[in-house]
Image (cartoon, rainbow, N blue to C red; front, side):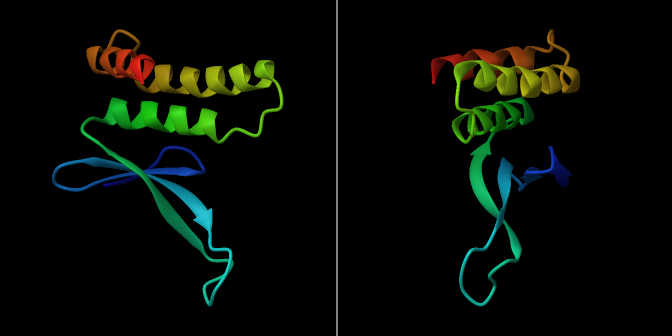
Length: 101
């Protein structure tokens, strides 16, 4: 499985986990300028993996004020709500867990 979440994030899986990776560009060495994927984390469910992307996007944001940060958060959160019906129990559990971290 290899699913592009958006232009920057990729969801893959092995036999035990869902894996989130972020697209990056190598900055030095013989492969300078080439694209690669950097591991963000391993997750037991797809909703948990997607919520991790949301957290990562917020933490990596270039926003310079809270209004912009909240706007970016809401935009990706709305995307997640479209992917998973808000009433989906797996999405609800992932959302609750996110609030505890």
